[in-house]
Length: 368
Image 1 (cartoon, rainbow, N blue to C red):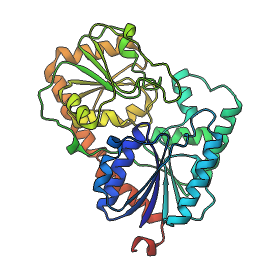
Image 2 (image 1 turned 135 degrees about the vertical axis):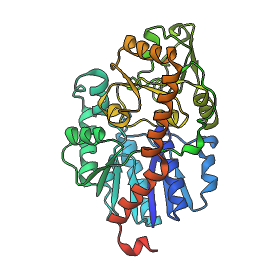
Image 3 (image 1 turned 45 degrees about the vertical axis):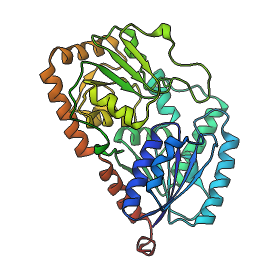
Image 4 (image 1 turned 30 degrees about the vertical axis):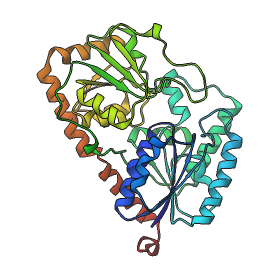
């Protein structure tokens, strides 16, 4: 089977794509990858060297959630259509809503990683303002979803959100994102530190919550501090307390070392359709302290300590309890690790996608 996959290079979708393509290659599938957003760095593409059957086409077209992206989306669709005509894939696996409406007779799987409207509601507690751009965005998302052959979301909550905001889906299912457990180290001794990793400029990730109240241990906030379209950073040195350390984006090896030492991983998100960083922390045997929002409750109930959403005092109390009780912290880390291995391993994700592909692609393509 030949699968054309689209991705963006600006966040967790790139990590998700790496895990998916690596798994598909191990199953002998042929893949063409087209990326958008930014041309990736050499470190971002190093993993491709192990995938000899991968045909990679990087581009710098804007993404659909970016302002003034209409012209780029039209141009990128024309480019993608040309790649489809050239490579003749059996199936399209699309990480952008827009391309679900491509005029072709190839089965199209659209993956709903996140969307602007549900993000805005979660962060601002209201509907987004009715602007010309948002009307365009709603229209193209609704069209892409309605014309897709199948729609996948990484959580039941996210599937419900896109149905609520954009109407009934042709065929919707939930496939959890996955990571490879062996990339992380669950065996190191743990420090009494709190870590969070992610897009620091994204109010949905809400990393700033760790700055509102003084935490009872050292805090390491790791990630990109600069919005891809804006110049200003999310934090400055003046925002930080004496026990808070702001660290730039780290490569996978450094992230694994950071998580291996951390005792507690704080999932501060107000908006989280899935979240790969908590999975990585769980594979590292960190105790998970998570915001009590529906998606995180769905994904981590029984394997994490929850605090009231966007409540710094509640977060501090949850962390204090675990720092005072190392035995409970260790037990919670063990529980998170076993939970993640059971539900969020990359092999499980890849197997679920292959099952979906095989239900959509003619048998002659599967055996080719």
